[in-house]
Image (cartoon, one colour):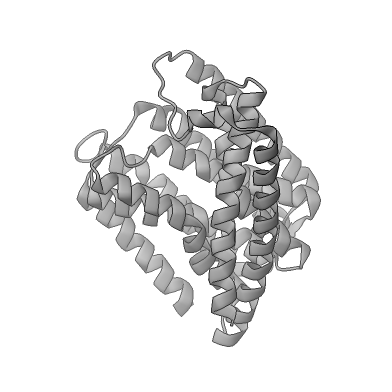
Length: 315
């Protein structure tokens, strides 16, 4: 039953996330927000909603390791699984903006998370607020830099949502909010039960199964685009997702309910894997051929991810 709960919970999170994104974009159009700002802020935040609800639900129920493992595992999966498999299917070009701005910011947030956990073995409300303030600063700078590039393409925004009626928008918000809440309840409950049944910690289930599950929609979209020889994935968007996971998901969760470190493995193993996967992107982007993530580089990322999953369960 626990696996069934997890699968149903993940399905509800995918559905809820999709409805929430559509409602958020439609509302942004109603408020005359520019497409660029919608793409850089509204969509990024809305797509992090499933992780946010799961982390908040877990923290409120006393399972802080699921809150932390969900974010750390998702960040590892975004690079090792999503980016790895996509690059194996089709080589990816690396934008210079990636290593000039997005990558350093991602590393900064990653080290900040490590410092918060190392110094007090928790993320306090004050530290959660600090993450959110830093995120706002990041977004302001990001929008400012983007406005200097008139040719900047904005992907993933359906212009037909401009015509959405207020009634339909409200229905989408209700469906999105309800399914996200229900999905998070089932997912957390199923994860705890499965961990007990298998004799492993909640942390192991969260950094592996839950993290993979919340990455499936992005992985599916990227693989389909790669197979069609379309632009498979924006490296900048992927890095932005990792930044949002740390800053908004953990920031908001900690502001409502401080997140306490329960398993030492998160601090001594998982977070170093996250930092390592993030760090290795720059050497891969430059060596031996610059600005290209080729198939064998994707294989390196994917094999690294498989090793991480194996060691998580063996540990």
